[in-house]
Amino acid sequence: MTTDWKTRYADKISSPQAAVKLIHRGRRILIGSGAAEPTSLVEALVSHGDHLADNEIVHLLTLGPAPYVAPGLEHRFRHTAFFIGQNVRAAVQEGRADFMPVFLSEIPSLIRTRRVRIDVVLVQVSPPDEHGYVSLGVSVDIVRAAVDSADLVIAEVNPNMPRALGDSFVHVSRIEKLVPVDRPLYELEPEPLDDVCRAIGRHVASLIPDGATLQTGIGRIPHAVIEALRTRHDLGVHTEMLSDSIVDLVEAGVITGKKKTLLPGKIVTSFVMGSKRLYDWVHDNPAVELRPSEFTNDPFVIARHDNMIAINSALAVDLTGQVAADTLMGRFFSGIGGQVDFIRGAARSRGGKPIIALPSTAKEGKASRIQAGLEEGAGIVTSRGDVHYIATEFGVADLWGKSIRERATALTEIAHPDFRAELLNAAKARKYVFVDQTVSRARYPWEEESEVELAGKRLRVRPVRAADLETLQDMFYRLSGESTYLRFLQHKKSHPYEEMLDLVNLDYTSNMALVVCDETGPAPDILAMARYDVDPATGFADIAFVVRDEWQGKGLGTLLMRRMAEIGRERGLAGFTATVHSTNAKMLGVFHKSGLKVRTTLDSGVYSVKMRYPEPEAPEADLAPISRRRA
Image 1 (cartoon, one colour):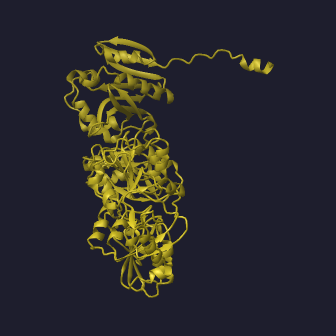
Image 2 (cartoon, rainbow, N blue to C red):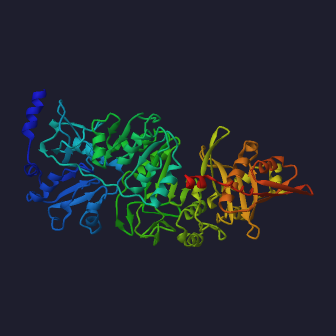
Image 3 (cartoon, helix red, strand yellow):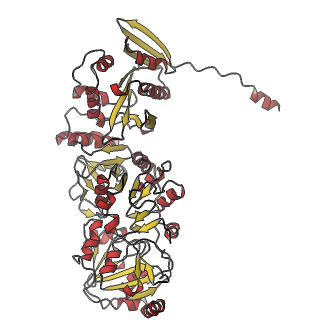
């Protein structure tokens, strides 16, 4: 058997020029994806394809040249892209090439059922093993289905192609012609990260728990997210594309796959694009499995991973949550790819989070990517019904299960400050929000966010946002009558929208409010809140607290007072004032434990509390410099 395949292998050796002569006119040709583009065969198609006419070329994203879309070759080649890369974008936008919008998970089925008939496949593979099997290497994706279904398979055999494991093997008997080549694989150079990308990365990383399984896409933002995950533990990977940044986390011990609920310990992907270091790392690596797109991108397979985190990018998002990701102003830019597959799969996952991440502006800050309504010609890839989280450098908007008013408020809040007033006015004109709705232009102080372990739960402490209005209102209505009275020093039966609006309307300078949130459930739950308002005449800030009844006595008030005292000191406050009912011993205890100098005055059953920061102690005389000079 071994001798038999080797003999047949030798008979199949061909030059690229001779191999392409086997292709007949009118046949549809699929070209291998990504870094596995068979360049010598592609070049031969153009240079020695005079016998061809009306041949359609189809492919996913490719890194190599695309000479078949050059002007003047239209009579010979027609071109259809499942995903538009830089090498064919101009041809598509000029109408010289076509684009097929389809979910990546469905392309293999279209090929196997011959609804999209593939006659010829040009691929690049590894050298055969002792049993005569070559590996599809860094590109299994839709190529697996094409190799299984096509009438004619022609392969470049490249010793630089890694022998990737998984569902990547093809016996040489399936291949008609083998073209030996020895050239490096195409590499994808990472783009440098800027402050905007890093801020987005931090915000997205804040949504990712230990033990989560990740899907990340192409570009700077996914790379920034990965960089921000170095303190996580036991992450896993199930993704359509594998990049260098994943290797960094594996080598740092962050990615182990131990907590994956499907194929634990395995990094699963459909194609690999990056550096030679990445390709060498994938070679014969039992921790990495290359699987076809009908597996990696199947939403039901994705959903089998608990805590599945899908991170994808977009071109623009409107105030209702519609996501434009492949087209702007009628010009096709990229493609649907696997975005919807992973958005829907992560949404079905237990603990899963589908995330769309994008910079808040485009055109060097002259245009907002958060838009009142998508521009004419924008292509909606992720619907407003599918969207859960939207992240920019200014924060994260949680849209799942939220009304149009809540969505418009949350998205305006994470837009660039220069465009917030315009977006809010547009939202009012469209009747998305109330006419008295406000959104601060101030920068959200993300640096004040923190996580704490308290009462057996991991809680988030963060500044209040305008989008918290309904959640805060719900918290106030859940307070007991006694807690409500101690907070407001009056019996309140209602907490109207107008009062809540004032409560969340912050500039984070003359006022500040922090909440403690439990984010472990299906929806964030606010457990406690503290707010101060500065009196510019005195430099003191009036401060007030509220803690839900079931969380009282567990340290939330002390925690918030300590954080507010830290913020006040950093911002140069002289101290705080407060008004406390004489029976509210717990609140008085919080103030006395604050480390500030506390003075109280009792009048008619109400304490007026004044808290000053201690004067800094005068430093002792330092004689060391004198001694050093004498030495």
